[in-house]
Image 1: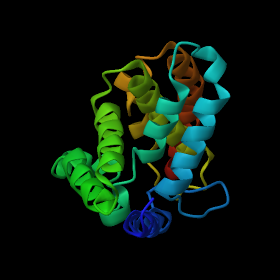
Image 2: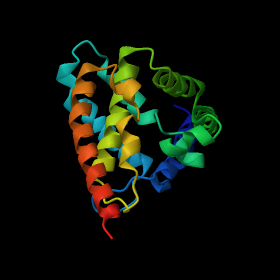
Image 3: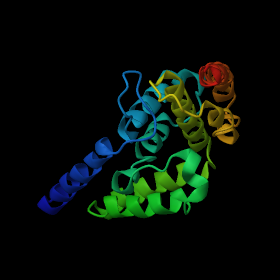
Length: 196
């Protein structure tokens, strides 16, 4: 490997670190703002844990997709799902930002990362559908576990990402349990707001 490629990798790694400093509108159970990097970590852990349930899946490809799916957010941050209808398409900005972020890499690495991101975004392959479904599940799970502010909108989560979680039977089964928790939290939040 030549020195230019080594420097290019290092530049990319430094730029990717910015994802650790971006915050989502989710909170950890300890009350800290969640980062896309921590979201990605648990998403990867979730798909590793259920690997035996998907024997025909290319797990390396699935994990790679999970790792890069939010990487573009390192430059302009995350747009909360609840606000995405008010914004230009989130995917367009994220893809542009991803291309900027991976620009220092050798061409083959750029192509692979962009292809993984595009595959994830299209949800056209079994691996991409699993990545999308578990991405949504991780978000819902974090919303239920988080030390959220009193005005947190649990009701939004009832339909959030359902078209993706419904594509994967295991995700749909997990979703049913998470939805029950979400409904209980929404009811609890509503009872607190109704109390004078």
